[in-house]
Amino acid sequence: MKRVMVTFSDILMPTKAGLYCPPGDFYIDPTRQVDRAVVTHGHADHARAGHGAVLATRQTLAIMGSRYGANFTPAQQTAALGERHKIGDATVWLAPAGHVLGSAQAVIEAKGVRIVVSGDYKRRRDPTCARFEPVPCDVFVTEATFALPVFRHPDDTGEVAKALHMLEVFPERCVLLGAYSLGKAQRLIGLAREAGHDAPIYLHGAVEKLCTLYETLGVRLGDLRPVMKAEKDEMRGHLIVAPPQSLNDKWSRRLPDPVAAFASGWMRVRARARQRGVELPLIISDHADWDELTTTIEELRPEEVWVTHGREDALVHWAGTQGINARPLSLVGYDEEGGDHG
Image: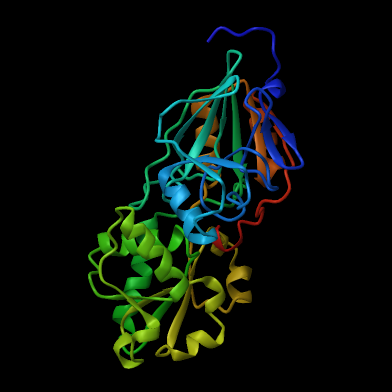
């Protein structure tokens, strides 16, 4: 693309409301209510209600509608992956991010410049969403949730196998698997099904609602049953999926001697597992680990890398050692610790 004299910040700039594109007069995942937003995925720290107009994938719009009600914005604009949309003097299109169902990278083209905003992403395969696709660009805006060399996530299937093995070892108990209700829970169920686990899986109400939505969006998850309608004894030897905060609250008392498991990239930090009373920590994340982050930057080799919400300094330093200009954006309002969807 032929470029006139323009700086990258003329195309995209950090503001108190989030990343703003002046040529198109829109924001990417704004943290405050704005007139026009492009939303990368349905997690609440990226997808907020009250914007004047929202452009996102069909699945992300459905997730927002489920969480906030049908009137979460006066104007919804559905964007299929790869479909170009002209907004003001900018062109926007979405590419798969591999984070959760409907997640996308926002690709902005204006004045001969292409900037890609990754949103949250991971590189490994997920049976419930489209896999990340690298998009060549001048500037790559990357998340950095796990941007430290200590965070190298193991193979997902091996971690899920640990939970299924527990069911065999302790058939009189159940495995209570704490997993973020949107994305992580459905991914774990999908991985368990691929491992040959066809038995009923019991769900907390918050997880059940989103699994039902996934099913309506074409993701098959097998035999799922609500915990609230099950007898205690029938759940022995079964997998129970619930939000992480349910591991130690009154809700879990209805379960038969549960093995407390928690699926998160933060389970690499054993102190976190101990603090939460987790018996079976599973290192499974919907965010890119250190190797995925660095491999992506090496593959793209953009003119600049902008780093946001996470371990910004470590990734900026690494990029500099590779001869790539990088800077932290220090945006606020996102779940920088990865929270329960880490």
